[in-house]
Image (tube, rainbow, N blue to C red; front, side):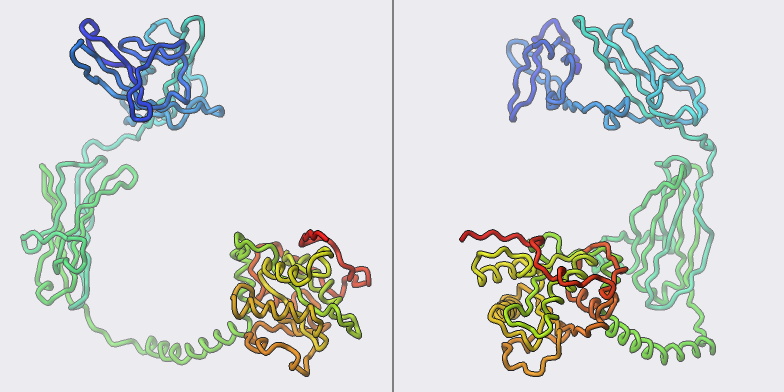
Length: 524
């Protein structure tokens, strides 16, 4: 960093801002105040901050200059840091010189030029001269200076991005885009008139673009709709398309009146050399009878639309589960992320009472997890399979229902055990009172007598009941599994639909409890 002042009369001090206070910089082996310069050998990331230099004549201290130093980390994969880059834009066909940093004051210091991080033509001078610039000269140039200081070698770099633009015509005629026109409109309709002018290959500061209404200036738009005049002119907007500059000014007509049909709306482009105009007029549009074929098509559509709407509603109702599952697969939707739950569902089924066929237990321990876990990526909590023995059963059930997003209850005529009834009543309380857990009822076998079930079970919506139809429900793509997945939380997973329960080995070993899934430690 360099300061500018006279050395003879004043005492020079350099300061760095620290916690809002100015701290005097003392000379170290790395940081050296040198009157006009504050030198860093070398600069480190911790040197970033605010610096100032003052001079004192013994009576008063004056702050001469302030700097903000930002030390950037060297880019190991490139010869420059994109944040330490200056850009220079020049026209093709002109001469130009790129100047290296003036940090090095020793003319004998070694200098190397690079273009796009490759050594450029063995150039070693402080200036890189181009007699005639071409588009091919565009690129990122880096000069690297080798500096020797107290027996150590340091490097200083300066990077410049040179942009060379193609030749632009010198003699350009500014003109309004478009010609005089008549616009068909209707009384009471809003209109926006566009006045656009070509301003050349650089922005002409002396060019004016504006509207006149019968040789008078319109009011300016305020930007507040309720306070806008009936006709107002917006601010000039400038835009660049390629290397061409344009100006646009809109004239807003809130509601066209009969008087507006007789006005001349004039777009004016005025420069020191010339003035161009474009006149816009409004006229009433012709009212035409509706063609017979369009009327016929409209009548047919009017009759067909209700039928199509009814058919669409029917399809949505009948195939609601298919549509929702398709949407989840396409959008990769996941409702389980970040909800704090550990399991997708707690499975409640007949345990203590012995079923004549053992079908319910096999369904709960084998078929249900085989499809939901292995094919669709859900994580089930099955008490007999996953919970380690030794804890309090009631507390365990309550805890794991709390950790689950759904409670799946496999209902049958034999669902009367104490533990199963407690799981049902606990789940109903959380679903109907606390509203924390949603219940899915699987009617595994037809139920003829509901008297021994809690009355609150009848309060659950019928759409949350899925009926198992034995062999018909076994395929992975059957209506049973689609309806069950529809009631389960959305979860982004790769679906494997190649499996079929009829082709799986459902031997007696498959019904054994396993210790994967939930973990539960109890102290006896």
